[in-house]
Amino acid sequence: MKVLIGGGSGFIGRALTQLLLSRGHEVTLVSRRPGANRITWNELTYSGLPPCEAVVNLAGENILNPFRRWNEAYQKDLLSSRLDTTRILATAIGQAKDPPKAWVLVTGIAYYQPSLTAEYDEDSPGGDFDFFSNLVSKWESAAKLPGDATRQVVVRSGAVLGQGGGAIGHMLLPFRLGLGGPIGSGQQFFPWIHIEDMSGILVHAMEKNHVNGILNGVSPAASTTNAEFAKALGAALGRPAFLPLPTTAVQAVFGRERAVMLLEGQKVIPRRTLASGYQYAFPELKAALKQVVS
Ligand SMILES: NC(=O)c1ccc[n+]([C@@H]2O[C@H](COP(=O)([O-])OP(=O)(O)OC[C@H]3O[C@@H](n4cnc5c(N)ncnc54)[C@H](OP(=O)(O)O)[C@@H]3O)[C@@H](O)[C@H]2O)c1
Image (cartoon, rainbow, N blue to C red; front, side, top):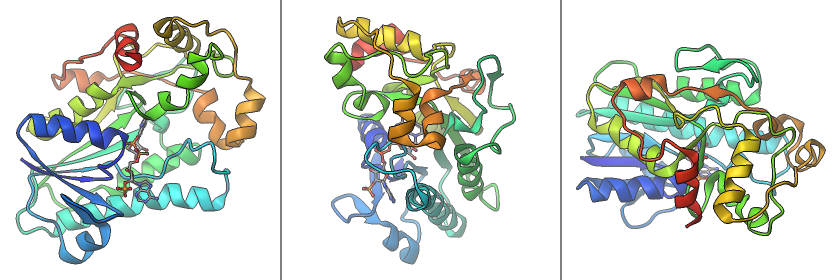
């Protein structure tokens, strides 16, 4: 396949590109910057979709950048970097003479309301209770295509664990120094997925004609709490991980509304992902973390 990846230069996109190339596919990125094997968003808007069999969108301003204050300008960037890029791709797909077979969008499990007791699968309600859940709803709506010439898949991702970025990027240094620990109470669920499985699910969604609709992009070991995750990461590094990061500190750095993403969590089951036949490379946390810190 020829695959077009919006925001493919980032953390997930680099792993996805490697996996696609290793399977004999060709990759073109859509980026803000021109370069080899890339087109820009402007080129895409004006020239339309280049010939391709699958399209993925991974573009989005980083949500957990600790150096950006939680204010209106940042919220606008988070929204526009996701909604505008998704709309540009959906429009180009809708107008293509020879439309691609698959259109895959990665959103987030922030769609589901944080809870210590509820359990969510892909059919559970959500998407309408706070800034992030609303963002996911608008993002998924922006991806909708007018017809059914192209198969659509949305992967709602948990925290992606991998080398060189993602959720674990900011955590590794304090944990390596023995200064890591649970965030807030540590009781909140922490849905995670290894980057190899995130790329694997995206390729599965592109290659397998029967896959469609929402898939939860989380490991099947969904009942991991943040405290259990901190303990497992400490163990993988051979370091103590007892120092809790206080709620007030997290709220001071990220702002109250954004801090919810770290201080609260949801138990998410990948029911449709498993039913679609995807087989996880890293279903267990211990092996996933061992690979990430190796
Ligand atoms: N990583 C996770 O744990 C995780 C979890 C849940 C959901 N997701 C979602 O999955 C997608 C990919 O995640 P990722 O970790 O690979 O992201 P990332 O590395 O932070 O960024 C992906 C790409 O988005 C583009 N981008 C950044 N800011 C932009 C802006 N203001 N306007 C337009 N494009 C912009 C960049 O591409 P160019 O510089 O080439 O333009 C960047 O390489 C994101 O939408 C993210 O919200 C990620």
